[in-house]
Image (cartoon, rainbow, N blue to C red; front, side, top):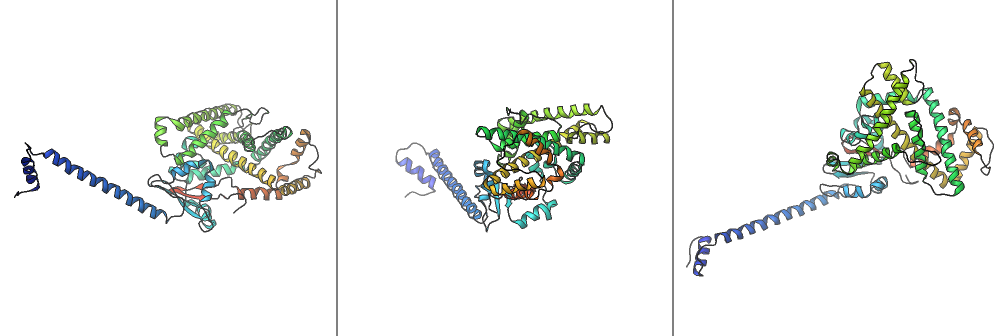
Length: 435
């Protein structure tokens, strides 16, 4: 009878079978395989339990399913070009607030509940700043402008902008600029109508608003609406930089790409360089022009007025140029994209509801005291003469037009998402004519 421990018994058994030595290596190998298999099984079981627990917890939260660690990033990336519609699809009549995980540990709260929106954007607005993490995503493009700042700096820029835009000179200058570029847009649309050619209405509106914002903001004339409709490098770089900056919200590797200067981050760097070169050249040229007079700016654009304020304050430095650059680029994105988007939806709504267009036409005829019919053939001269009758004061009397524009903004908000710190986010997007 064999006695002793397992290793001794194993050794004797091998000796009885003619083995010359005890196979310790074989035994240890078998023991290691057993331990390794147990470890792998334990890890697999733990991972499966974690997935089950995560799935169970996800069912308790309203909103799209979030994968472990990466959250909703795959679905967000796939729907980035229709983000607003995708977010809206997550809501229902009984679910007006949802959670969207952008990847561990970032969780955003989206809400369309009127009470929540009022709390976030009005009642307790100061409690929900943009947050440094959100601002950093846009810092290369917008610097420290009004869209990427909080607190006192944001209040100061808002106060300055409100003061400047309330001035009669800038108001009158803006009215003339909008009239000039509206006429250019009308003539281009008339040309498309006469030829029956297809065109992108939103692109035309974006061209018009880029021209107006650059002239009001910089005092620079861009040939956005010239008959040939040329490509504008400034506009292309601005659009590309805007898209890439916002896409960082769903790109967890953008820091790495920026450090390595590859992919979209390399393109963003190039676009920002083009924008900076253009902007700083305009600022330097304006400083040189303003050195020839000592009383007030020769032009009424926003850059001239802000530069004049800096000069009178004795704050001429490179930092002032940087601040001017940031304020002007923020002004462009505020005035260009929002106005163009609203105009596009407004034209869409007028096409869908021709009876509303008739009422707007009747109101225009009444307010400006011009008799006319839709069927009358218009000439460029008659359109120009009609536009001169639309003064700032008469525009204020077009109440039905104002109501139609307000309804367009309600159905298709110019700024459909308003972000706050900590991932809090308020959505005001409504689809079509549904609330």
